[in-house]
Length: 249
Image (cartoon, rainbow, N blue to C red; front, side, top):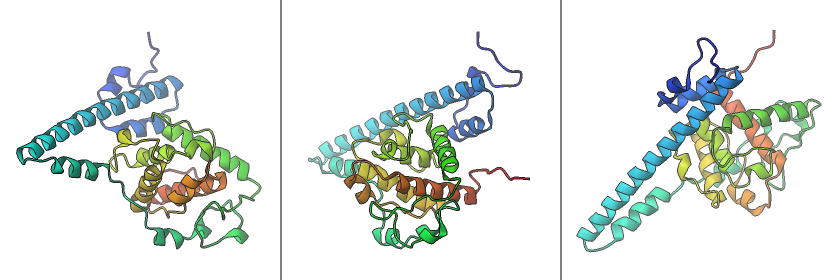
């Protein structure tokens, strides 16, 4: 039998919750290990159900489109509909190039502030004395927020982000209605990068400090570039009130 702390939700209670945001908030507030384990399991099951439902709906839409195409004597409607569903938003390169990376983080040296995009050629170095502590805390935060997501295993700020799925999972955690995570393809990193960065810019106000084309050209993303972007995304979430920070007294 599962040991339950008095007042903590049971697996049946959690299974009855169909709002992903509610489960995410419960996971953030939970401190008991067993309770967190149950909530994570409920999150995974809910995401699985949503994914299966989307696949069924998508199959029905495609079947309807095929029938419409056949009734019109062609398949033009099918190809057009499929293309529109697979199209991902793109990042405006001009806005990327003008984004100020000078305001990326308090833990970076002010002498390294630059109005250029964080790319393979120019990534700000983290030179503050407490950088290692901040870096590990941010890595742990990313790992905790993306834990329920399939295909994501964040171990560092470099290779763990190379297919763009981790970026999408982190953005989706705070904006679950922005796009369908279950249809993302890890073999299409450019589309994943563009989707994550454009969504973070549009909804969180996070400057697109990274460029999808730069990232796909690299064997592995430069950890300083990824670290810098995640710091800015975290700062944007704090400003939006989606992340609570502990105030020192």
